[in-house]
Amino acid sequence: MRVVVTGGGGRIGRSTVAELSAHGHEVTVLDLAPPPAPFPRGVTLRLGSVDECGSVMAVLRNARADAVVHLARATTNHDDITVFRSNVLGSYHVLQAAAACGQRVALVASSIQALGDYWYLRQAPHYLPLDEAHPLAPRSAYATSKAVIEETCRAVSREHGLTTVVIRPTAVIGPERWPDLLARMRASRPGDRPPVDGPLAAYVDARDVALLIRLALERALSGDLTGAHLFHASGADPLVPESLAESFAHRFPEHAAGAAHLAPGTPGVSIERARQTLGYEPRYRWRTLLEGGEP
Image 1 (cartoon, rainbow, N blue to C red):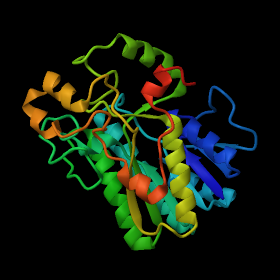
Image 2 (cartoon, rainbow, N blue to C red):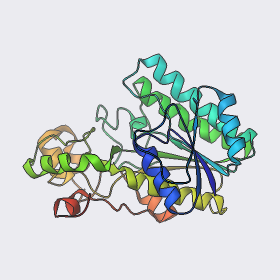
Image 3 (cartoon, rainbow, N blue to C red):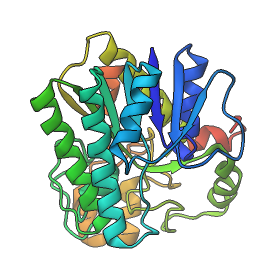
């Protein structure tokens, strides 16, 4: 298949481009600047911004793309107006361009932060692990923009018949970060703050996000997925030495009852939908890497 990846030079983008290329797919990257390291052989780079709908449409048409993967985003390092405008309008430009160009599939990155107050335990989750059906309570501009993007994908699927796939990554770890994280885990003790964002200590290797993206694209382009879909992109276990039940008892006693049923190794973010629908299984687990696996 022919795929355009926006933001292909980013943390998830680099792994996604490598994963798609390694499996024989023709990849064109749309990004603001060339990456620090070259893309794999055969990958085409087009410079441009998703803020310009015409540029996106031109790249999709020139690539004769079957699908688009939209990973470009404004981070929380920008001011709130920039974050909201860039994330929401950039995603809308990509989706509208995909529909106008007759593409069959658009995959868009959201974030686990779309869960908002439930993710940060400002409100007690209705249940754990958090799955894709759990209610949202966004608060920040970034979280709200991601919730809007998810609904926009559903709307575009209804309006244009485009198959849309939204993924919600948790804390994304690039391969280069593992040595530092593993050193911190060796020194960690029960009750310590997790080394990744969020009290549920949910993490995912960038290469596993790329795997999920490839599996979703291939299923969608084969016709096995139609309409609008949402998947959590996360690891298979929490990044804490103890169980989440024990972690909550130490750090969040007010929420301990809601986590008490979680067995050791059970993550706080469910990936069962991706497992059942896509055959997704994370390949990079921190305990395996700690025992001498290759990062």
